[in-house]
Length: 331
Image (cartoon, rainbow, N blue to C red; front, side, top):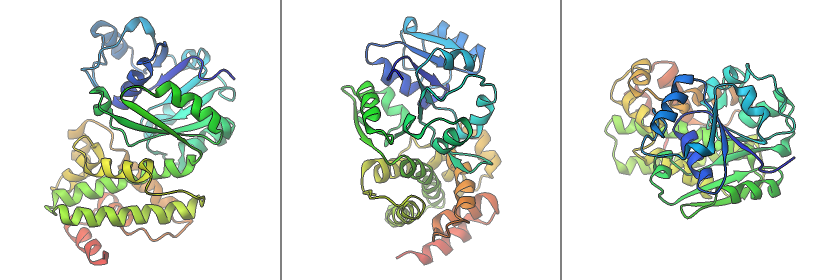
């Protein structure tokens, strides 16, 4: 296996665009898969992504675009998947090329719906990719701040930490600092849960709960995350590390957080459908809430915040009532 070799971006959203910018900061060329030919044509005409992070200009000579996923996978060594989790299976259904000899990096902050598997498990089980060839890219890191070249931190997790270090060097720059880990499952589950808790923070903001309560909410959220991670994947980890706690904090508090924005709309009285339509972007936490709820049926971890968000989004219980019950359980 050639590492990192030719790198491919699979996806055309804001995080995919930010990752492309990070990689192209160094002297390299990339392949870039987008499903829509019209988006590719507009990208080539404008010199930037026509729909996301439009202020980021690209050197088009260093990018090979294609709407053919087989073409991109075949000609690449490292595949960075950055599609919304609900659409991952749709893209992969078109794939005929084997991925066993590729290095897979998932930058997807979600769970594969219906399968209730984190993405690394999905690639291992469904596509036979060896676990040592699968990595996960963790935050805390918002695409919008990468676009502005504000100092950001990324963690690359892989069972083979030498491979993680090789890719980490490819990402490092004057505005990106990197670290490595072998906690693939913990970081992936944590990245799903932080979106759920960001929705909770947004709901509370929409209901006019103040900063004092938000601090209590997030303090309880990190404890809830820790209980779940210890149960599902019990290894020695420090939940206070930036890839866990830091990612939770930035997603729960930042104005760039689409999950917080989605939650705020729900707290203000929007229906789920109307909030999704108005946002025009995927709030991964909506799907992650249901998936984690299903997964937790096997583990029975005490997760009152997850349960509250699930009841609001899927059982249509009043946010006012559900959050009031939640506040009574906090200390």
